[in-house]
Image 1 (spheres, rainbow, N blue to C red):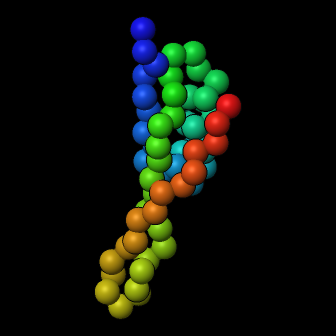
Image 2: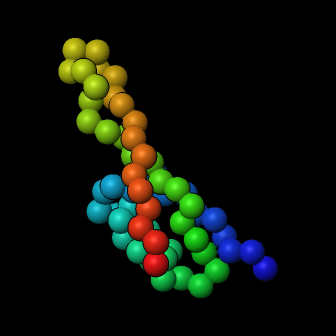
Amino acid sequence: MSDIQVGVFGVSGRMGSEVVRAVGRADGMTVVGGSDLGEPASRSSGRRSSSTSPIPTR
């Protein structure tokens, strides 16, 4: 059977980091990607940039 592929939203935060570690230790699961909202791109526009973070391997 194939591993469950997991994507983590909020990967650079405390909980996202814990999820990545827990999935990395779990049998049958693999982290395949993650994303997070970055800092505001512009305080005047109110828009936020998005970013992706590298996922550590086991």
